[in-house]
Length: 382
Image (tube, rainbow, N blue to C red):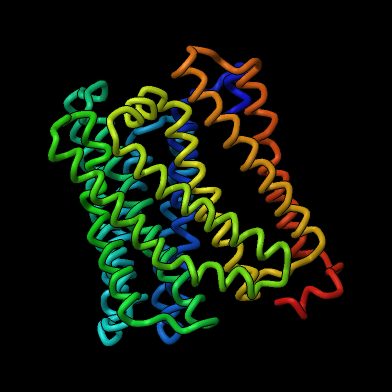
């Protein structure tokens, strides 16, 4: 996709953009969330989650082989709709499996995540109606996409992320139940009104603005309450790679919360949404790659699902370099364009070149799992 901006490859960019967004969000993050939910929280019922996983893979493969050719058409819409029904199956299973564990904060977060996953599905349904009425150039088209992304990112993925993180922290240090309750309350009750941040553009009313600011502050406070626990878990990690993965994921979490808080205010909101092609993409990639992906990679290593081989470590370093530099370029371009109407020299070529580091890093991580050469101290550090 990045190459196609520099050189015409003869394919429909929008079709591949839809493919990229669906497979990256669902084929990568959603799959990891689904796997960890089953194997981490419901080990006694893991086969039920396995069935949901394999049914979901059929829908993802269908999207992968339909979106590139026709974009939103019969088959792609069919498989996207089937995914939505598979996600409802997951939601029902989460509620059934956790019915006797409702007092534990991690399971309460998972149940809230199920509700947000259901809410996110309303976005694609609304999008279908909007496109049928030829309103794809209207603000409602953007609001439907933001609805889907918000309740998937800031709702489902975020609550699963927090549930897993709290479960890992509790293995290392006790957390008071009172603190956990407030983290849960502030997090969950901030997510729905946080959508107001996107609605300000369409409904510029003072109460919408106030709602956005208050919900951003609530999430900021919920994360600030866990600062000591974050520091403790990082201090207890001896492996440099594991510390880097979790440290950068937590840094991206803090930046995400600060970004939400700052963009609640009119001046910075205008800056971000006037440069949506760079700053919003930069924000989404920061959350998806910097926060969720690095956290899940850390968890895969922490739970010993993957081995800390030399190739894996090298792949992680290359991947992280690609993420950091591409984020720097995106945010620099968006800021320079807004304040000085200036574009970075060779911006698209730079972005394309740096983006190549990410698949190269992923290849290194995959090769690392087939390599027998390990760091001599890797096992002792896990």
